[in-house]
Image (cartoon, rainbow, N blue to C red; front, side, top):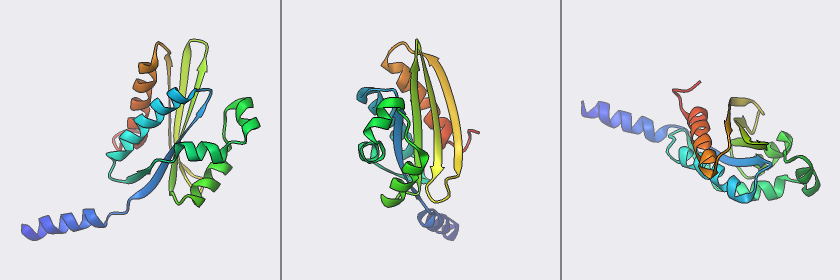
Length: 151
């Protein structure tokens, strides 16, 4: 029995952890961006498959060409992949947040930096009431994105 326990511990210690960074894009201000990013990083920090890196502001500064970002708020995935590769992460969780009238639309996806494959994607739409709306949406999407029990 002791060998089984020690073997299980050894297998867990040897399991590959993938590095991931989170980037939040869209027509949101810095405070809203921080709420969303924090919720995703909190969920990631408890995930045994990933090691999360705090690089959100660095990603935004390096990825966005100021004029393009001001026009539409989106960041091309090719730039996300390029910078992610240079920064040494395996995956990037991209969260797109858009406010349209009284609603907030949030889409999240995990992108493999090397292959550009979208590993998982999910969306959520709610009526915006206050910053807690963003917190609740972020928590739900982060759970759906990183939980093995969610499809």
